[in-house]
Length: 416
Image 1: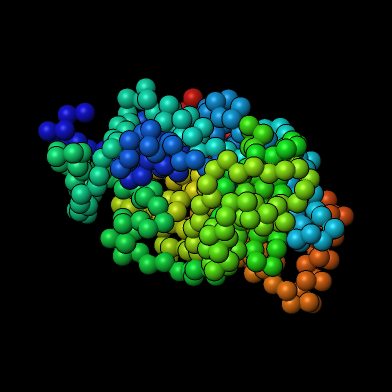
Image 2 (image 1 turned 45 degrees about the vertical axis):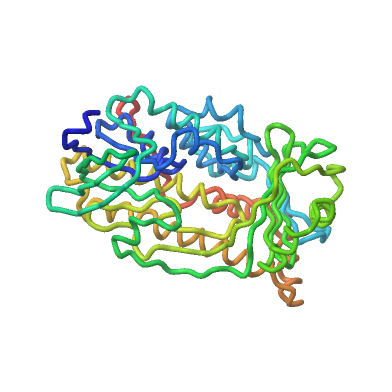
């Protein structure tokens, strides 16, 4: 790219994480010109040592992107997901057959997946390498954003060099503390929880058999995500003070406390990654768009980690925005107009509200020892285990198979 000239793009995406790159990859065959602006080097952006709960709907989106064969070998395919109220013996088990009524294009062989960050990033970064219509600018900092009549003027810095580009649409994929959202004056709703989340990776004595667990303890949810290398990642939610005290324990005592919640079904546990802690909050932007600006992923919303919904919501955001922008291009519309961008807002904001409400309800109702509520939720788990159609409904919500499902634009594929 000639950085001495003023370059025009149809779309500029600020943030080269999984959600931002999913949007870029979804638009790579649209005919639109794009720039992805990422503050880190590609290697740094791909090196985050964690895995995500990855839904069948996200898997379908990656299949439409043509990336499924690349990422699938690196994913753990959950054959079962077991949900329980602490150590109470009643357990509800979700299996692939429970999701069958929601299938569209693919035969479902897993309830859910665990997806390593690096595997998703490698596939997405690779999909952009030979695309002549996309400039992947990294490491590059955003210096200034100015909204003008002819588009959004973006001053970008790489080292000591500064240059400017103009875009019809600016996409904020720049995280939960999004400077672009704040600069646009978009306020947020929500609240911090009384809990923090601890994550770490364990090596187990016995195999995990590709079974994931979500156990609800009074202090908060405790999830076990099996990984493809035979290890497991845990996502442990606890009140702030308790979480901080746990991290201050000697590692042998920390593992003892962890094993009490984990159980002994996989034998002895060995910690292979230092635990990390982060606070938990619910956040929803009052709107996802302004003239020439759209928010996606964590810049638009944030939820409790129960159910593993966060990344999957962002991937659906990216696919939906790609569909809206491609349709507007085909109609000859101004991509950055509110008329166009509000289609994305109406599509995704109400669906994300449903997910946010679900995660909040689950956390509050299970992190509670009021006896009538304890009895009611345990009765609900028993009913859910006995009635397959209720499990199917629950899975449709948990896996994003409700509302309007995005289809990745592809001029080589006829519309469904």
